[in-house]
Amino acid sequence: MAKQKVSGKLIIAGPGAGKTYNMVESILQALPELSPCRYLVVITYTNSATNNIYKRLSKRISTIPENLFIGTMHSFLNRFIVIPFASFGSDMVGKEKLFIQCGIDDVFLKVEKMKDKDKRSKSPKDSAIVKSNILKKLNKKGYITYDQTLSISKNCMSNNSISRIISNRLQFLFVDEFQDTGNDVFSIIDSIRRQNKTKIYCVGDPEQYIQSFDSSIRTFKNIPILKASESNNYNIEINGRNFRSTSKIVDFLNNFNGRYFKSQKFTQKASPKQTDPSAKIEIGEDILFITKWETVTPIIEEFYIKCESISISISNRCILAKKNDVIKRVIAAVNGRYMNPKKNSSVLPMSTIQDTLLSTLQMNQIEFCNYYQTNIFTLRKHAVSIFKAMRDGIITNENTYGKFVTDVLKLQIKEGLPVKIENLRFDFHNEEVGNVITVANIHTIKGLESEAVLAIAKTEEELLLWIETDHSIRESKRDTDEKTDYPRLGYVAFSRAERLLCIACLEKITDKTLLKLKDLGVIIGI
Image 1 (spheres, rainbow, N blue to C red):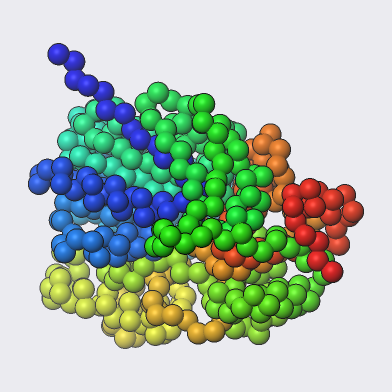
Image 2 (image 1 turned 180 degrees about the vertical axis):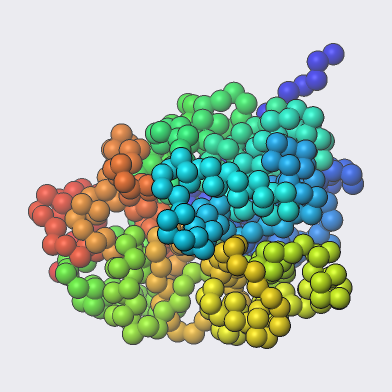
């Protein structure tokens, strides 16, 4: 008798749909079925999302099972594929794995700078040969660059025996923010699905895809979430609720979706907060376009006046832009009294810091213990010291990191491998920040929300793309140089607002653009 095919489940859920809430509920429903010798894996795309799911589960169950894994895509690939199976792949990675928090391009640039100018790579072909040789040397010693995690995992999963072993280990696989999955990751997920032993649950929203197109994706319609939605291998479920925003904001957002998934059209409807089912749906404030332009200060003043008129505190206000120079102007206008959105968790990143330290010394654990005549506990102590130094602002960049390692830890750094401090940054302060406004680039705000949002476009052209409703235009890239899609950036920015949404532009806009805003139901300010 043929074994029954197990289809994946794909949930299309927009902003404010309670994706995390529903995922936690689905995890809780799956746990009673979970075999003690298999895993339930939850893949997220940020450390903050990982921590959020942990916290929510901890409130519902007394003990998190050891075979419940929650982590980022990279941490999942490293733990379940790279560490146990990389040595069987063509890369011939050494037995002890050390993960470098930078890519091969970073290592290549570091190596090139150490050479005399006349000996540096002269052509793309020369560079490719050098990079290949660097990878071979790194892999032999067990070093794995950040970008290599994915290529090694994909290579391993092309081996049917390894794919079968992985699938046997995974009873359930949950994937959050599925729209951000690239083709290589999707091929790994699909390799697991094809083994027919793992129940797969994916959730995402194509309209919130604002990542760079990978080289294998030529058009927006070819992003994995849309390919999966058209496939018979995934059962589609539409979640059209929006628990975050008022009716007026949700109606405005519906101008930018309306995509069909098979026979189902995706639109949202404002819903009462999940914490209070008896609450009435708030109609809310009109969407407002602030007509001040050229400088950010008068725009922000108008935004503040509107917030104060409906009693929205400063800490519940957020200003967003796509361009970093606009962000800098906003920060100056608020006198530096602002906060960045928290992207990382408060979980101690000891293993990441430990691997980075070892790569700085160009040693593995055994070599470290032998050379310094100590044990693994000293290495962990050093990792904790680095963590505390970053938390206290002693380590702020690559130079202060190097000085700390040599002067404080008394260790000998070897030149050759770079350090990416940005990839070691974690959220050190989980407590509420004072009465300051949130200011952020749109890319960093995804997944977060605020009572009041002001989205500032730098140019009229940028604003027009933000408010574009034609899907054929929304699904095209900005141009050959721009790697992200402006229309969906606008959608992500607008959908962060709970009660008040204001839009502005630093260029004076034409009457035609004003008319388009009015047609979308936007009220034009004074």
